[in-house]
Length: 234
Image (cartoon, rainbow, N blue to C red):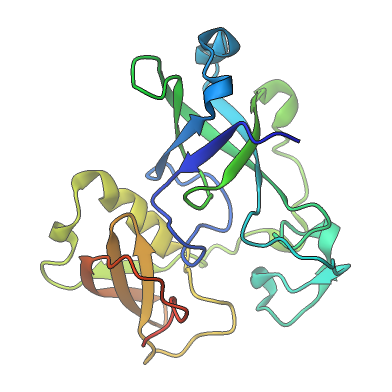
């Protein structure tokens, strides 16, 4: 397997990444390795509105694999078979995401570069392949969703303390709000007093969650040092 590209996204760490793809406010870039920056390899791709990305769970590689995992959807306490989940802890750490192809940039220094929306992928993630999404065969609206079917009340109401949202550039506001509404907290954490810290683009987001309301208390420029306790109050 050859790594053909890497993702450039607004998620520099695992905490806060959407659990599934599809949030339209999150725009990422697929930047190919020099060997694959061949315009002919992309001929015809502009005719597709969506694509599949096959990528590596590069931060979840383990020497041993487990036949069962604890899905966040079930609160992190119930074990299900690894092949019945999309857990990153798999025999082969391969991820699959369906995203919208916004544009192909053939003019930039690293061209061709794919701009996609809806990726649930960490910044710097290796990409193995890109394939067209074919609605007539890839879409199955009648498909059963097992235990992963979303509940109607799963999304959180997101509120920002006065003056905080204005600290973000316009391009980041929708994506951050969508990501927070999906509740980035670990499944086992629900303390209304806990302050969570999430890195997003070049910013550090501090928030609390009480009942069904997530409140962003503070947004600051992100420091580059690595914090082992990221995701929780310090």
